Amino acid sequence: MAKKKQINRREFLEKSGAGILGSVLAISIGAGCAITKTYRSSVQNGRIVIETRQHPELLIAGGSIIIEPDGMLGPIILINTDGKTFNAVSAVCAHMGCTVGVTKNFFLCPCHGSTYDLEGKVVRGPAAKSLYKFKTEVENGTISIIIDSGKQ
Ligand code: FES
Image (cartoon, rainbow, N blue to C red):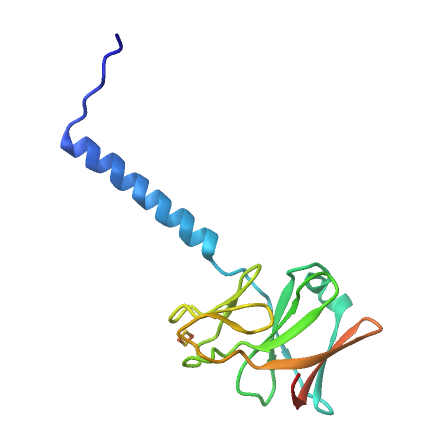
């Protein structure tokens, strides 16, 4: 018959506390936003033009960059959603204006947890409105983000 090892209360709390801390860290790291490079850009003739050869991260599904356009109020996230489709959405959260981050499948606001799909539509509040989505055009190795044509 095997002997059970008894531990005292202190040992139990130390071991269970360490386990909980380890779980919290794993969840935090797993749910975190990707590190996305940020670039300044100018708006010319109502559009921002991005050359994909200068941004290899955009060539793979899930790859994204953040653009800070001169003269605009907030950054724009440009993401390759499936290997051939590019979405450009405002990174300004529709709840209270924090800057959302990018995960593999969602845009996530660090302030109160609003979550948006890659089209910018709300999947979890408190935000009630979608992120502003810009029209994009892909042609000859460039992606144009149309600034002044309104929503798609
Ligand atoms: S500002 Fe984004 S959820 Fe509140």
